[in-house]
Length: 521
Ligand code: AHR
Image 1 (cartoon, rainbow, N blue to C red):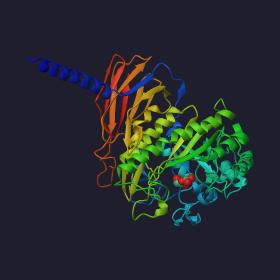
Image 2 (cartoon, protein in one colour):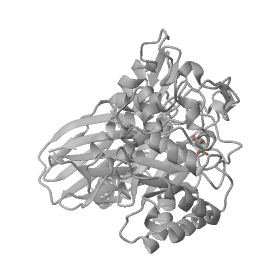
Image 3 (cartoon, rainbow, N blue to C red):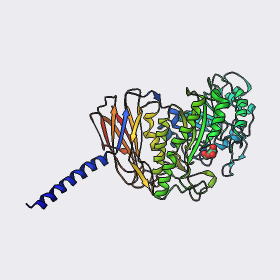
Image 4 (tube, protein in one colour):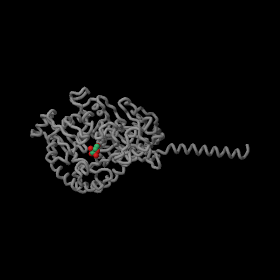
């Protein structure tokens, strides 16, 4: 063999060696370390709350069809919707708004249904017959096993009105209002834990300044007493939105611990602005990427608000309540634009999973959140059409994340590859790990890269785990895949087995644009 041949073979072997080690390294770029032995923060189950505003078809059509409907119902409430929601263990439902809350006068929605007044609804200019009122909402909560989170009217109602609604709901004895409740079918006081004192008071709730709102909060909250039904009412102040940190600063300074929680609203708009939000179906990779990037911005918004809250409340008595979040797209063509009816794709499922990861990570401060919204509005769990109902990809995320509810958050360090698009990038991997009361560890991982499989290596420190006892994956052929009434199972969870556990190291081969949930023991 000539010298030059030997040289050629040598350099070829060196190159092969380099390529194979580099490939192995490249494959291992997604590394997560989980401190399984640590963790002292419980993930509040209320992070998984929902929102059902009196808006569009959410309450009328989506939840309530009336007792005479041909659609199977429990005294007017859809059975299929109740059945699906029960499986999510929904912890709480916020109602009646949203912006609607500050236009709602509760007495319109109690007493015999036939005598309730008709009103023009602020959303979509339709007539609302008030059939789905206080008792109907509370019956719905009972059916799905959720706690009510009532949003009181501070914008156009009076302190007297708000106080009387609370008395009607929760006072035990025979006052006029307690008797009214009994006549309406519920002699025992309701158990109401969460009470919103206005909504978006900087905007649709009255266009107030934070100084003026905080004065009103003091005034209204003075009259919201603890009756036996509510025992210890948790008052949630109307908080800030997006990057308006001044609102949080003023409220924390002026109201401090008189609030159990302060709210935050942040919506993901994938398009360039509110006038061009982008469609919920058939969208480009740009709208996929931008949607995810903007959803991940929730982390910065929470961090900034939490830093302000830490100045006034270092022991975290006041919860940050993200009681409106999710993707807001253009309404579906041919729907009433005021009804905010949109489809829900695999992208939106990834927005849900990565946002829930952010909330879980900040669980010390974020102790409640309510996705907007539950049925037929914005990023819904369920879509309905007449007697048909379909579960959205977001529904399945909430199902896969159930084990994190009430579990202990396990601190993790994520070193993730990037998903880049047109010169911008985001981390490809988002994750949460938690330990439940029986010692099982639950891991949820999202691969936001729509093109590449990611091999994720997870080092589990401080826990002895021997096997993967359960694995599920949610993915589809395209990032804009949706479930429709004609094709309801396009994006549904499947069993997942591309993971292995050896000597405390878990290796997961994550398909592109997927969410994986694993249970380890
Ligand atoms: O969720 C729809 C609307 O968005 C709510 O009514 C309002 O609070 C927010 O601006």
